[in-house]
Image 1 (cartoon, rainbow, N blue to C red):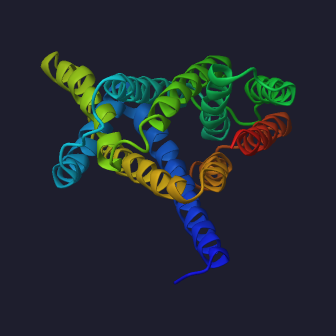
Image 2 (image 1 turned 45 degrees about the vertical axis):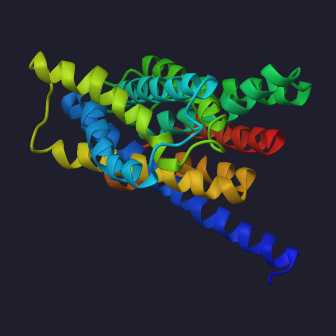
Image 3 (image 1 turned 60 degrees about the vertical axis):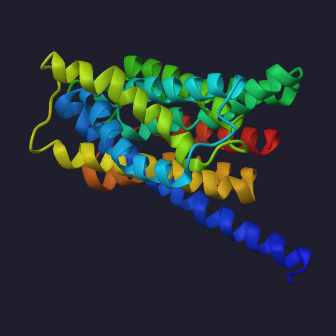
Length: 294
């Protein structure tokens, strides 16, 4: 029988491993979504990603069976989670069309801090320190969006991209809060199901029927990978959070700097000094607020 210190050590290790895995998968998702959205547009990118995700999720749902927790208020949170995720993905993919991964990913990474803030607002008055950190994060977003860009990408519109990413983070935060209300009630597979089902029904099928669904040979690998890593990242986060929410959340938020570094190495997306400073402020603020709220 393991002693309490041994159990805490094992829990910490699991949280670290799955938190890092989440960050890597989400970083890969940012990179693949950015490529696909610039080739076939945001709606087609999310449509294909949701279809791939649904194909992966359905067998897991069948294995898990119908949960008893999917009733009453939980069904409303379930729907909010799915709709919020799909909307957030569309906004994120749209942002990637007009902005660099190194700027957009850190803004999207504020979703966890937003979810924590929503929980604080609904539960009790938000602490002055938390409000101050939120203001700092907003300042970081402003610097990242308005800083001089040394090497703009084609069709880059940094302000528009930052606004879209901010809206995406807000929606993701609501969805994450809704998912948090269900994490102890439903199996992971059922937490994955609503977004992918809504994505296929609301986006994929209508675009297919209207003959507006796009896919090119060059974009196909990115779209498929986007669907795979998005499901994988969410699954890793859910597993890690069961052992330690704070550690998993903080490490998962590090997908932003990982994505920025990989975008520089793979796509040669350079950021200016002011942009880098803004990104650093965002990441530091997210980590601090996440630890404060968890």
